[in-house]
Each structure stands twice: as C-alpha cells, then as structure tokens.
Image (tube, rainbow, N blue to C red; front, side, top):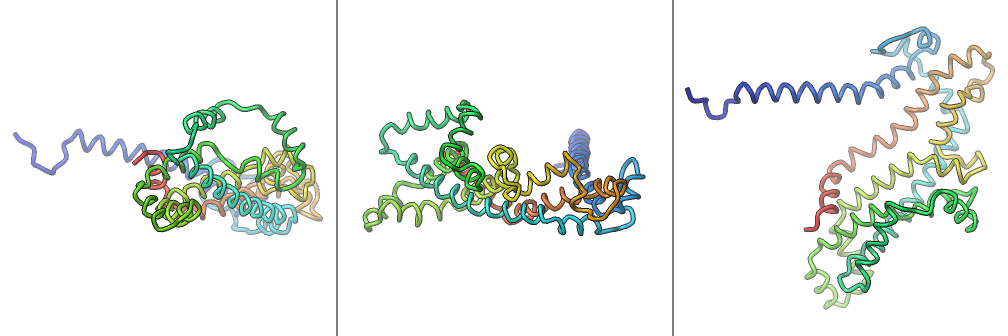
Length: 296
C-alpha cells in the first residue's frame, strides 16, 4: 500500500520526536543553570542556605543581594572600567582590523600570500606570556587600561574573516569609484564597510564579548584595584567570598550566609548586559559569519 504524499512515515515521526526530545533536554540543561542563579539571587539568604536540591522559584522573594551589590563601590567602579575598555577597545578593534583587512584584500599587494601565512602562523604559535608581559611593561602600559586594549587590538581570526568579506566585493565597484576620483580611504569607508555591515556587526559582537569577559589580562597587568574590570571584581568575589565589604555591619555568620546570594546576584549583574546585545545583532550573525567565511 502506497504512503500518502505529504504524510510523514512512522520512521520520520520517530526521528522528529527524538530530535525534539534531544533539543528540549539540551535547552533545559543550558538554560536551567542561569535560571537557578537568577532564582538564588532573588531568594532570602537564610532560606537559600537551608535549601538543597532543585530550585524552581525564588525562596521568599528578596532584592537584598542586588541592593548590596550596587552599594558596593567595587562593582560600580568595575562597571565603569569595563565600559571604558569596551568603548575604547571596540574603536581600536574595528578601525585597525578594517585597515588591515582592506590592505590584505588588495590583489596587487606584494608578498600578500607570505603576509597571510605569517598572520595564520601567529594563530597557532606565539612568544608566550612572559615575553608579552615584558613587552607591555616596556611600552609603559602596565597598570593602565590601555594594557587591556592595545595588546588585543587585532585578532588574527577576525582579520581573516573581514579580509575574506572585502575580497567578496566585486572589483567593478572599486574600479568605478577610482574612475570617479575616489582614493583608498573613500573606497574603504564608503564602499567596503557599508557593503560588509553584517560582518562589521559580527566583529563588534566577537570583540565586545571578548572585552566584556576578559579578566586574565587585567589580573596580570593591573595592580591598582580601582582599575579592575567587572569580571575581575566578580572573580575575587567568587574565589575569596569577601562579602564583608558589601554587608557592612553584618556579623561573621550573616556575612557567610549573605555571601552565597551575593555571588549569584553578581553573576547576573555581570552577565545580563552582554546578553541584551544578542537580540539586536542576531539578524546579522549568521549572514555576517557566512559572508566572512566563504569567498563569494
């Protein structure tokens, strides 16, 4: 007996059911840790310490942990430093990466292949942490926010993606612009970059997430605690459990209890801002990554 056209077979339905089940399990395993942290941060500290097992809702809804977080001058200063690093770093990242990608996309560039091989080589091999530290120190960048921006000004991976996107732009557009008297800067800023805006959006996302989550370089280069970015402040809170600076006037036992919900509140405070960026750049993400990865 022939199967009706358009009606899925038993095997297809079983395969779809398996896929939906698997994806549902993966989604729950991915989302629940964040939901748990959110519920824990909104819970009463004493009830949370007494609770064990799965947390399905906040235990006696409370914003006490968030109040303590935003009253902490280290958190506020960490936010300010992170936004400074983010703004300054993104300007350097996009400008220098665009300049480098445009030069490497020119077919008439001498030793173009050799330069690309050298750049790819740096993706797999580097001088190591100690030479990098002495280089940064020799430039006088240590204990300043510039040490978190200039050494990370260009990513070789992002440079290759943007160069590939520039190469996909038809040569006829560049030739027409040159006939009209356009120079290289006009071609870059008025033709290449506008046509590659999806790639630019992806670069902003890649570089932005990298700056936002960076803490290791800050730990190495910064000695002044007032310059610490948010993630390094968060790391100190998680590792040292130093809640006494936030819970002023609390006894030692209360500090230990409040410290647990403070950890979760700080994680939410540090995570939510960068999560809010994704919906605005989501429409560019797949298109930009594909344009930059495949030569058209």
